[in-house]
Length: 188
Image 1 (cartoon, rainbow, N blue to C red):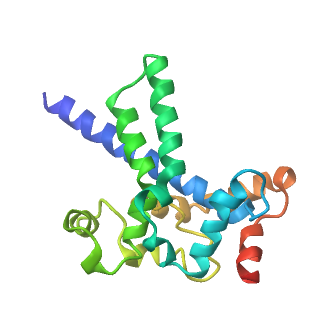
Image 2 (cartoon, one colour):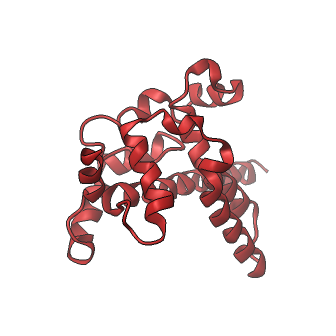
């Protein structure tokens, strides 16, 4: 019984970290290679992200649906694909719910504490959600680290091993010079 509980806790932690990593990967890709002119997702995804880096609190005024429609759509597709393949487990549900709400969790670090729901503040204080201080690292300097927005843990690991810079180095021959979004941000 104890081994099963430990196994479930480990699986839950890994599922949360995976959702956080995927949110960070998407965020990194938007910041690094996306521009407002990127076909299909440039206007709807990259442009608001670029605006967020210029005015970090601006997106806190958007409703949940306005800032999470795309993540909810993708998460719904993941759930459907898992269902159709008889692979719909609690892991998929946890991943989908966290992924669909990544922008909302991200919004909470940009809001005044008095406007953040008590349960979210509690989860921030106990370290399950990112605290504003941790996320501020992403908005300082070159804005090229701490891309994951759910927890601080994936960022600690990925930033310590220079994961994003290594990925950019490997993708440079395929996708070109990184930091295109940074150049776009500087133009605003």
